[in-house]
Length: 348
Image 1: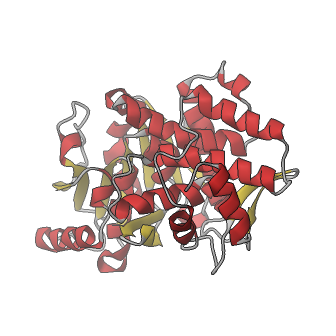
Image 2: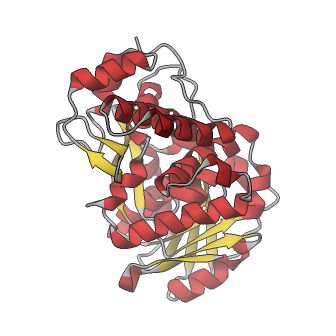
Image 3: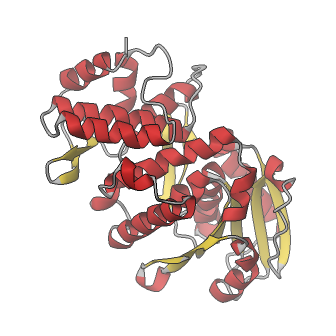
């Protein structure tokens, strides 16, 4: 399957299927025809995988980075850019991010800032990357203060979502990606019952199609693209606790699922939805065995402070919430209301 992200002169395709990683050389030749060098950014652990047999048909340097969120630092961006200089990467060459969402975020941001922007392509190998992170051009690294607070919009020239790589994912990483799939499934108004007849390729394709359609209409999150942050306000607050040194054991997709469970309950408290909507959300999350409760003892005041730094917020608390007419961005929510909802949700 191919899904078009329609951004006029910067449009590109997302290819989904078994073996599509082998299209990398033709993608570079077509979209970056002047490239003489490719810098492949990949975690060391993935370089050992049997599917890491990529060909670019240009001079290639492989740069290893740490696994997961630990790679998403400004220090790592500096290290990558120094490596680009050392290897002679030019403005007409290409960076290739190979891995999960953290790697595509990192590679995309490095490409965005090196020499004021070089081309980037992604070979997305995790479910999170394939249905969300690698698509849409949002790149970022973390600060101790919070998730994805330093970044840039930088669209890739193409995204290859090779389903063969998913077979090597640990079970927890697979479930983590399903948190982002659940978000898309709910945004589309689909039910848990429909999941019973859907294959993994069906819901991956549905999630990619939704994101591509929204990004095509709102590239820089001035409107409806913010809806893709459903569940992420609390999710990023949970992840911020980890960045600040908490031993909290939660992965991104798990945090998104918890954030969704909280958001629909906040919507119920505000009178935007009824209990049947909460049940419907919980049924979708339960289908994939996703968590719906806080992952440990957390203070509501800490979570509120982190949520106030969310990128959607403008000196206030802002959530994407369901309502009678669908989903919308709801700003200026009273701190007392959100605090009460957090206490009911199990915060201290």
